[in-house]
Length: 389
Image (cartoon, rainbow, N blue to C red; front, side, top):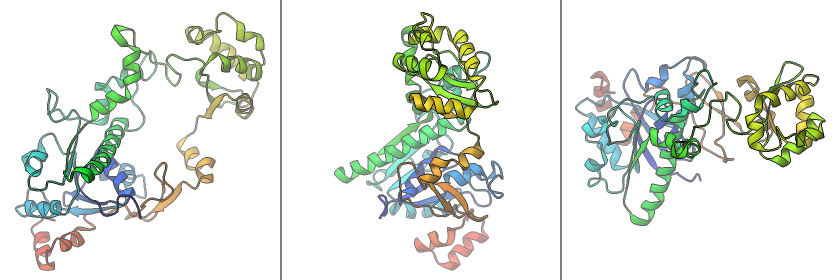
């Protein structure tokens, strides 16, 4: 039995933040009913066609869910929604700012009718404050949260290569829902969760915030290197490859000089003998390291680093990650069905068992969900004829 079996989640979701949250719930056994617009669905379905004609984002965030197509503006939609909510434990939504409240689906409108219902609203900026009505996408929140100001090269900022603001908000929504379920077990009452992408990223930005405390200069943009610790980042090797390595303290620096660079005397060089001095003199130090690595292959460098106990990594591509020997050895790959056939999928981190059911086709479960609510085949056919489902 999975931890969330018996929990029902109704979700009005699109894009990434809310779908990523509810997929975590589905992974742990919750029944997740995803309401989608008839004929169109979650617009993330159309982001690309890279997975056998399906969108990579959608395949990633929507396995193990039931897709109910429903026009939320149709006259019967309110009745359907409330029948769903009568049997639900959690309502999740990340519609446009204010949309759920206008449909009567805000926590204040629902709390008396469904006192045990947990309502989780995910938005860019939260339900109040001067920014509450602003639209928010991942890149915009990366920018608004200051993430772009510390990411990239000295000449140009860069966004993260994946949707970190959405992921951050989705994970805080997920953990918030788990907390609310535990709390409800004690109090018998539901709860309102107001999860803001900006606040999620603000938490993740706390190190650079504190580093820039009281008007101090923020961490500089340092590409793939660490902004304040050196050597910590990518270094080329003699065979044209790149090795990522990281030193955290003076003890590791001494070992690095002796066992990796083969120059024990360098450890005492006053230009480099503290973390702050190594960071300040990184141009000179990089030249020394690159020269030492120029006669070595990446494999030889990694071997020396491992022998010295210095943290290191390969600069892998997506193809390398698909074939990563550690993931294979730990049996982290499973298979999920999709409308286009089975595809591999990683098990959730920390889990050896999880629900890994199919990615749904648009409206695939409409009939079964409506039948479960008491609608007859004739009533469902009439809804379909009217374009309601």
